[in-house]
Image (cartoon, rainbow, N blue to C red; front, top):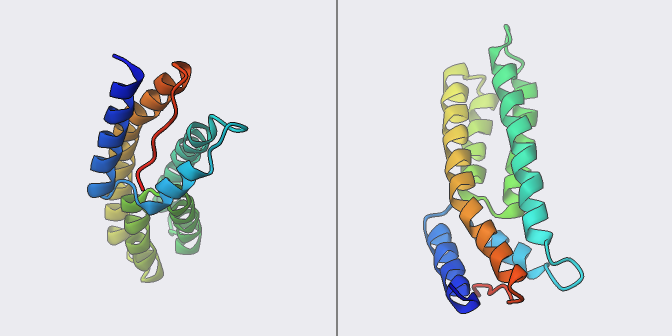
Length: 151
């Protein structure tokens, strides 16, 4: 495969992820921040997001297992996850976090547990769908090509 084919694949894959709501316009804005002085910016930011997300999901799980549940602590973790997902354009995760926060406020344990399961599912889907996109970015850059951005 050559760079032009990889660029087309990248654009097609991004379009699908945007259409299905995995990513939103904030991801496009994040890409626009990448330049020659920081060629791995998007990959670095997304890698940090995935590492932080693992910790936050584990913290939420542990907090929901406490007796009694400290819903303010759970909400603090969810709030942080909502903020980080919004900043990288992880639209579906951000939306689940908004619902999760409502259940925290209502101190609804069953609703919180369901939301945590949904978050774990959405996180896994995002990770599985975004990793090929990040690999394509690396291939394009390694071959000396430029990263196309959807406008």
